[in-house]
Amino acid sequence: MENYIVSARKYRPTTFESVVGQSALTTTLRNAIANNKLAHAYLFCGPRGVGKTTCARIFAKTINCQTPTESGEACGHCESCKAFDEGRSYNIHELDAASNNSVDDMRSLIEQVAIPPQIGRYKVFIIDEVHMLSTAAFNAFLKTLEEPPSHAIFILATTEKHKIIPTILSRCQIYDFNRMSVDDIVAHLRGVAEKEGIPCEEEALNVIARKADGGMRDALSMFDQIASYSGGNITYQKAIENLNVLDYDYYFRVTDQLLEGKVKDVLLTLNEILAHGFNAQFFIGGLATHFRDILVARDAETLPLLEVAPAVRAHYQEQAKRCTPRFLYRALKLCNDCDINYRQSPNRRLLVELTLIEVAQLSSGDDDKSSGLGPTKKLKPIFGPAAQKQQVPQAAPASASTQPVAAPEAATPVSPATPVAPTTHAAPAATPAPVRNTHKASRLQTVSLHAAQKPKEEPAPVAMVSEAEEETYGNAPVTSEAVEYHWLVFANALPVEYSATSGRLKIIKPVLGEGGIVRAYVETENVLSDMNEIKSQLEHALRKNLDNGSIVVQFELNPEQVARRAYTKREQLADMLQRSPALQKLKKELKLELA
Image (tube, rainbow, N blue to C red; front, side, top):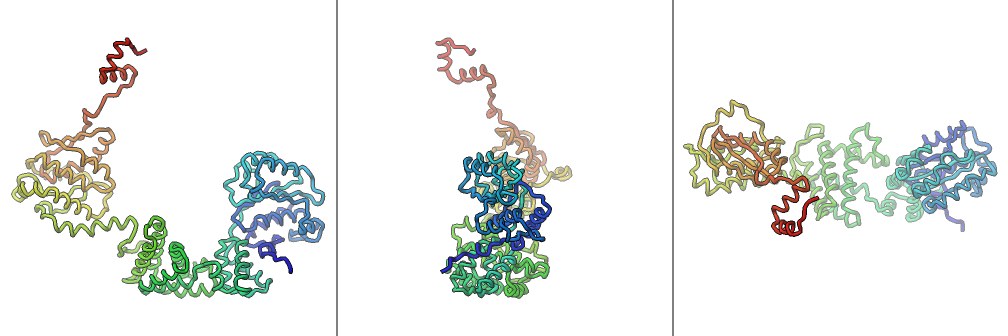
């Protein structure tokens, strides 16, 4: 019985021509060899399984070949090539830096660098996973890497270039390997299947390529795994069963149900998917990707971005004809929001179900004729900050209907920063004082609710009023209670951006003085600055609601709160002696003085 060799090793490229998906890098290396312009140090970096170590071995074999071909490839027949193929070449040394990352290991490598090659021109040192070297090992390697012997070439390979110290990077030519495309992986797998005599479906190879995420080694490993599972006949059904991949048919079926508004069928399909062991977040992420693919399939110019088999691509095009841009844009937004809120949700399945219900509701109603970049929002959000903003207007009409009717002057529309409440001066249409005192709290709540109903289009309080408007104010009598009441009304009506200022206003008690001067004392300079920013708006609100144009608001620092600080040591001692009689007695008895 022959020893079984996995496909990733059996079909490993041996020439630059056979390397898949890295044509730009292989061309550069071949030209460097042909022109005899070889650097002393190279750094190959990129994701796993994209050919870094393979290209390093091919490069080492080619530069030592005694009779290279015209295309710049190794001949494979000379003594150097045979020694490399049989694994007995002394010109190529591979070091795994993950397990040999100490200073002693690096010193041993440096000793080998000094020995010239017996056959061939160069000794090539391939250091894999070089980012695993310790800082001390890197520093010990620096001098040799910068000025190696003429016969030594270093090829460093890593998947994490950012972990390599800059002094190493500056001494190397850096080659970045890219992830392989789905088409390149499918073509290579198809060739391997033909050589192995394994029948396979195109859709199955496409599933393997997408699951490999750009890595050829992972794709070949999955190919061998599914070949063993299916008994040598790779089918699409066997591939999705073995790789635990959610079938395309589920996403197509769910999309059809969402387009038809069949909420019950959608929830049953979700339950079926979860019963197969798939995560709900994995499903919602896959559904968002499916909507993206449908959006791509709507236009012939973007159709090449769809990396699927031809049969599946035709299915996408057919379903894209029944999906409007409005539906796809909103569905993508809802699925993305669900994915973001999934980890914080206490009931994750309910979150996914509510999202599917919202998507199903998108198909009902008239279609937008706009481009879809800013569609009119008709649905009520289920989660997120937008839901909290829309909950207040829903409760406001019911609560406002139970409140007492305000005075006629309160019916005039005003801005959120200057809400209207019943006046306190003696006007013919004013509400009697007993009613005002009895229902002050309830009316205050009503004003707050009305202020919450106002659309938050103004990010700041109302602007300054003109002198012409100020002259229209009357000269009605003003009481301290009325000032305090409208002071609180103004604080409650401030926008959300001024929540801190609103809270400070509520705890400050205004004092009505002679000539309509309203004084308010604050404790710090910062609070005084904040209060002066809204001073003009507050004056306007008080003048309008109290019908008195002589009202002036003055914010001042509270003299009782401004304590004099002791800056010098003598001042500090004097302050302590003044506060503590015991300290005075101790100083007098011991005859202490400050030096």
